Image 1 (cartoon, one colour):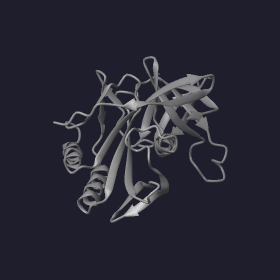
Image 2 (spheres, one colour; image 1 turned 180 degrees about the vertical axis):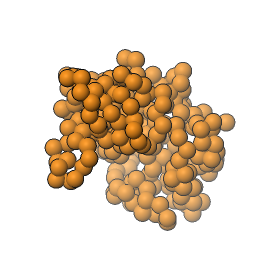
Image 3 (cartoon, rainbow, N blue to C red; image 1 turned 90 degrees about the vertical axis):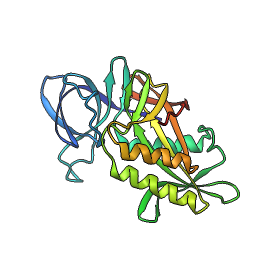
Image 4 (cartoon, rainbow, N blue to C red; image 1 turned 135 degrees about the vertical axis):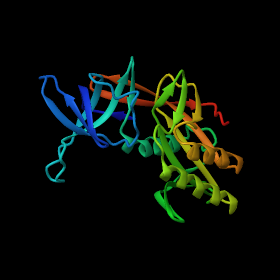
Amino acid sequence: MKINDLIEVKYISRPNRFTIKFKNSDNKLDIAHLHDPGRLKELLIENTPILIKYVPTYKKTNRKTKYNVIAIKDKEDWILLNSNYHNKIVEELIDNHEIPGLEKYHVEKPEYTYGNSRLDFLLTDEYKNKMYLEVKGCTLQINKLAKFPDAPTKRGTKHLNELINIRKNHGNSAVVILILHNKAETFMPNYDTDPEFSNTLKKAYENNVEIYPFHMITKTENDSLIIEADKKLPLILK
């Protein structure tokens, strides 16, 4: 995936969950929309470079901000922060048969309602076998260990329980965890931050829900962010 027409600015602060303040090249303050509900405390550090994208339709849609936050720099690496792109990335990965274990599937329907949840994808193979798929984006990395979530997520736990129920009713279900930090080499759920989600992920694994921690490589080229498929990472469960 390639995201074009990006502007590099400096992060200043986060007034609320979905808004950040930044300083532009003229040293003036402005605001941008942050589409990521995580805490991101290890990334959102004052004067850190971020990439934003202008939204030309902001007036027509009565937006308060005319920019979206796309990525943030962590040392020499850029990390995608905009979760709007997670499903688009996974759809590309599936279409290109790049996730080992999901190569035989294609996207039948995005945002598929099952039970009391809206799952990210319904996949099918050539024989019309169904696979229910949920996607999570992971930006937290400590000593090459990727962890999710970085904030408690009851919605994420609810989705895992739906995937478990699907398996118990003889259906196929899976979760793709997009690892969005270049340095990550292994994935483990974040037991310290959200033990309920982490233990439910372990329960899902034990009930044969397929878990794919899939690593992406992110780089920049001129004013664009390029996100490329890498490989499935080892999964550690307590």
